Length: 410
Image 1 (cartoon, helix red, strand yellow):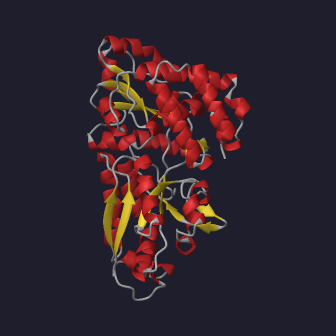
Image 2: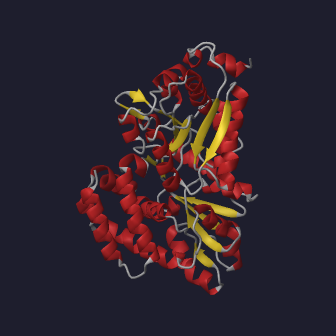
Image 3: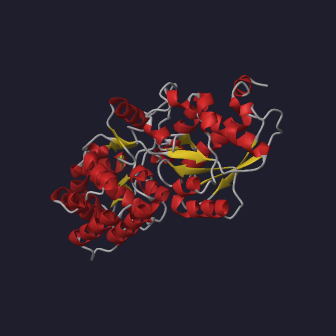
């Protein structure tokens, strides 16, 4: 038995005794090039560090497609061994229905309360004092990714903030280059809008609107300016003609688009393509306006099972996900930040270092998924995918619909 197996068996992980190895089906929506490379690190670490086997259950199409499939299986009595959701409120109903395991025993045995940073990540896994998930990374949405070559070819300096990016758009159009890439999935539209809100109006505005349901603020002047910026963005994204987020990222990588608002997971795609941060592409945290990052990300949950072998494998996976070597190997490939601050990230690239610096400075905000229910997020998805695709919808009309969603949010 290797060193880590010995360590695991000194904790509650081996409380079941001589339980046989198990095949553990793990479902997730990580299917792009960078994501697949990252999740392969989880599978490798799990199989090297335990006696169990990772059975990959990737579901293409992103979270919006995968989550209903996962929920349907769990409710229908055909649960997987473990599944990925985002930090926040997405799993609340499954927990309340008694369908997910309480993993507090693993968290206590592994000392998660002492190592998970920021603590809000573990708080997002906690309901009524019990811990139901293993947080694995910190993902932030508030990034603008830019192709250096596009701007060099245009005879322009690479933008350092949102206003400079908008000002460069007409020149890029003249050159036949797509100014800004945006995929057709609805969550991309709402996510980009939320980035505009958090960076141009400020994170406190976003938190008051989504966290406190402040409808007056949602209809006020600060948000009117955000909707005007969204209108500028709508002009810039016309002509993207791609669906998936990584297809939009590829337009930047191949110098067919000037930039893209997307979370830090885009780094994984740049890495797979052999692009070098600071040389081939530039990343602007907070759109170069307000350097703040949200501390959302991904976590793994574990459905209730009557099979002690599966339970033992679930416990072993939960523990493995937060081990130092796992955190480093996975997050370097994923482009996300680790959930523990005591790991060696000397190999981090220029953009990851920027994220680590912002995290250390405390310029952080809660992820939208921690503030909104899935129902509210779906309403926002519908609103903003329509707004970015239909130029007949005015900024004022979109803001009025936005206010209605905020007024009705639970």
